[in-house]
Amino acid sequence: MKKTEKLTACPLCKKTGAPILCSRLDMIVRKCRGCGLMFQGPDSPARHNRELIEKIYAQYAGHIRQHLRLNRPRVLQMEALLGRPFRGLKVLEVGAGNGALGHMLTMAGADYTGLEPMELCRRAALEQFPELAGRLVPEKLRAGLFPERSFDVVVATDTLEHMDDPLEAAKTMALLLRPGGKAYFEVPNESLFRLKGFARVALKMYGGGYPTNPDHAFLFTVATFRLLLEKAGLREEKLVKDSVLGNPARIKIAFNGRPPFPLLAASWFFKYTQVDKLLEQGVLAAVVSRGALPSAAPAPRTERA
Ligand SMILES: [Zn+2]
Figure (tube, helix red, strand yellow):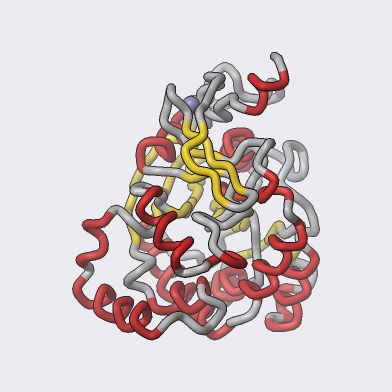
């Protein structure tokens, strides 16, 4: 593959020549002509701007109270979607962040392990939640890190969009599920991206006005999220759309604790009216199980009926 083809190749369907959808500051977002996936390719400098990204993470890792407020109902929703309580289940969280969800899952009785490669997130997690000591693994997800079929539930919230190769990651997570096991994924819903990007720039979000988080390499919609799940050999059991605008805790985290007042007021309005769900914004949450793995899946596996 030629260099320009590599830069414009869609990570999901592999079609080359994805044109630029938007370019702002040092961020370049492309959109695949084949499957519609929006992504920051390797040629988007913002994606490699570590100083900026670490700053965004440092802000994100604070606001523990808001994170707990966000994760308390999230655990209940996860249990409802998974169709069973976490008590006694072996759970892997990929991208443990500041440990708020890990703390809640541990409280819910899960046998919890969290993967978190960023030191500043791990430090924040252990300062707030000492019970996670020995449960956080300082690594990125990779094949062979854990034996296959070793978890009842694999959780990745706000994680797939950050990864270098979310398709490979989803396949790896599928292999970690025990028979009957399920994975729970949440990704931002980036439908109506142009409109949202415009608003984020106007609100000077993400360190001065980017249309999306510089560390979000992939911008999913319902269609491209479903395509990712399908290509990873995962069977969709449930897919729900959750609100971000109608969740004041999320809004406070996104604006480093100080959202503009009109936005916070709007957030409470949306929380109770739910009309923002009509706007295709928010997050996509999916519960998936291990389907028939596609032939492109990693070779070593022993399938038992
Ligand atoms: Zn594509």
